[in-house]
Length: 218
Image 1 (cartoon, rainbow, N blue to C red):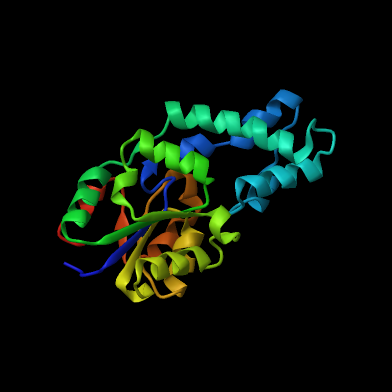
Image 2: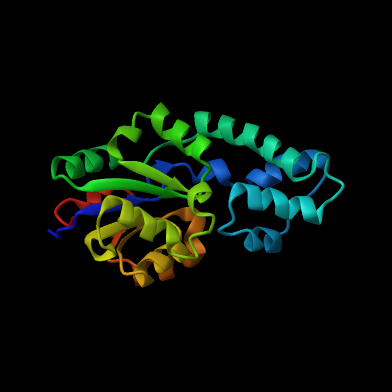
């Protein structure tokens, strides 16, 4: 069993089975205005925060009412509804978190999801109590293509990157954490199927479906 002192978790697709919340989210809203988003536009927004996505499409489609702010408000309502009706804890995650807490492992959350949505989603499922703090895109102001959110999390935990494991489902984020000196547990997520080979290549551990697969390994 590998010893570590800190665990830094992404939320969507990692703590929560919630990637469907975001599946074609912007398209779901813009369809009401007769707009269809291209695959190229979706690719351009990978790693963007919600405000960045809103600004991107407001700039591209200035005819949208309310601009970026109107887009944000419309998507916010859709996100809230989807989290309440779709999201659920990942298989085996509660038992895994219980085990880490018993061992005295310090735990934190590093997510690009807005704090208002992330905290509510986890509190609704009685999961926030496992974590010492949460860092969001609002705290660091930069995507996970850069390691800032992981490095700040480790610093707040009082630990070196080498003493922490980052749990992530986005292949590019796994690669970022690995380059920054963290051990990585990659979560196989259908939404990132195109990057699964990259995820596997940079991860020290891989979860296919359930955290139960880590029993005896971590």
